[in-house]
Image (cartoon, each protein chain N blue to C red):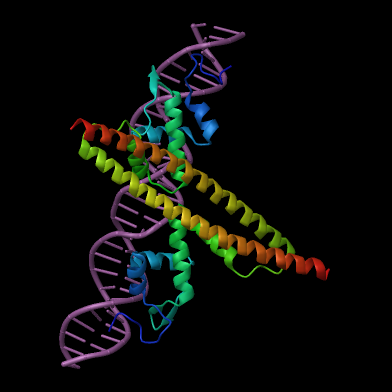
Length: 134
Length: 134
DNA sequence: AGCGGTATTTACGTAAAAGTCAATTCCACG
DNA sequence: CGTGGAATTGACTTTTACGTAAATACCGCT
């Protein structure tokens, strides 16, 4: 039973590669970048649920076209809110900016979807013609 | 009046760089990649409205995290639908795949938005506490 | 004819995000 | 105890998407 680490609540790196479809190199890269910090037993990495959660956040960010640097920023927002007022206001502002970016992406998706709909419609219409003609 | 090309309906490369906030290098790169095909007067590029439209599609694709190769595929879908049935069916399938990708991105955006909402809420709550305490 | 400004071409450079490869190291098992 | 399979490390390589610089060309104006 090599698939499951013996002490529960820990994932091995290969479990995560299988679950998320990424390579070990990729996960190690994110660790080198300081995004994930798995604990170690000897030299081998042990990923806790929190690490797994962060990995999923990273991959989600990548799907949305965010760079590692941007993902790092987003992750930073998820830490406990700072105690100081100025930092809090700054955080609120950053959240607002990210929201605008995401709204733009949503508009981009909607437009693209509409265009794809038209492509499909035209194709189906053309197929119908062919079907009738046969 | 160097800003506007004298024969209407044509845009110069710098007009486009200004409008879209990209460099001439970027636009030329997309041309090298075969995505845009401006006409030439001598050696200088003249962009027609269609070229401008394609450029906006490319940049929209980039905002959504698509690679040049993926954008090339999407653009290919926008050409007149093929006449042959097999090609038409293939096109319809590709459109479906892209739609799934976009739907995934939309889910990703929604999740991220929800998390940002929570970050903002927590921050505002913390700010309120500080306000009260002062 | 000369000049300033804009475009083009060619070629090399580079940063981000991994892939690949080789050399260990660590174990659990027979 | 030694061996095969998973993990790690470090170094080098690759791909993508442009940046940047140098040399050259063209265009309208004076």
